[in-house]
Image 1 (cartoon, helix red, strand yellow):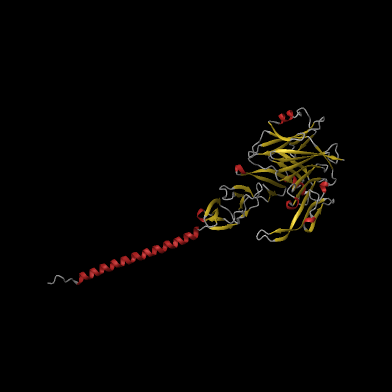
Image 2 (cartoon, one colour):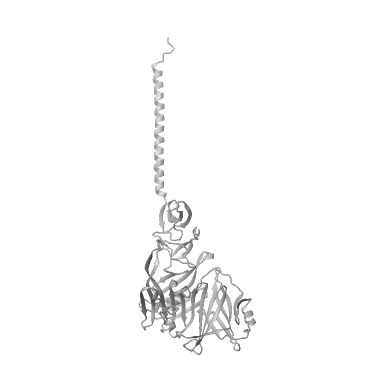
Length: 485
């Protein structure tokens, strides 16, 4: 018997075992491949379901060459949005959560704070408020300031309007930066059926106007220009001010000028010999705050004055700073009749000799008084991109006049082109009393501001004095002019 002989049954069993083993291995590989395909399909479905959607946002700030901006809908976070700041090379520099927003979404850069465009505003559809993200030149603020959906802004002030059947309500808000919020600063409420209007200043807690006004067919004031000025004029700007108790005083001596600092108003008046004196002139602002008090020593002709500057700090606390001055020398000038209805620049020229194609655009009231004025012309300017000269149309002088209901002039807003006429008084605000006489002006100067106070006697139509105050270097420097008849 040969020991190497293997029975046929044994061979069959071995082959059958090998076949089953191969079949198992093949089935295992098939299921693994099937699992891999299933996982890949799930990954694709997940990426499609949770992929972020970007909405490009304009980036108008001076650093636009280095950054880009997008609002991203994060589907993994239930549809919430975030603001993403990108570097020019595509890197994400900042991610700011904006919460859930309703599209369409509106972006704006209209709001101006302290003379600059401070950031990006985001307004979702059907919302009464939006978010302001301030820009510091490198990053946005992480916490957005909740701001109202305003219909108009003028500088730091934002106005909302609720126009209902019976009432029209306008509210003005301002940014309170240290507290990262907005504050309600002025309110207009007009009853349409009666024309009864109230304008309320929230900081001063005073009514600026209350009474019935003539309305048009829409139930709004017919003299809208005047009442609009009452609503917007003289708004305080909330800021982190610190009140200074010292009274900086400019002393105009005989041929010498110097600054002194007094610890109080009383100390100033006592030292200069006016403690028991009565002011010869007082000027109050529209809030009934004493703005200027002027004293005069009859025997010497010396004038002494104190001017008050009012403001509200971030805590909405009313503060005041005092500035003193003396005047030893009074100038003599001739009063110019009709000066305040002149359509020329403050230097008495119209600038027509400095441009080509000079043009004037005038509008008048129904009574024939000037309502607005603008002069323009072609002037050569060099293009920024290549420095080549070209003629462009520029505005030379622009004015706007506001009248009370009785026709007396209330306010004149003046501006001129500083490249043509210079920067001094390139803007000038003039206010008139109820007789239509100029009473106060304030204008721009590069180092601060200029104020003009006009003093009248016995109800006369022509002022006797004009006091100019120049806010310069921490002092108020005076110049007093007496007008000759």
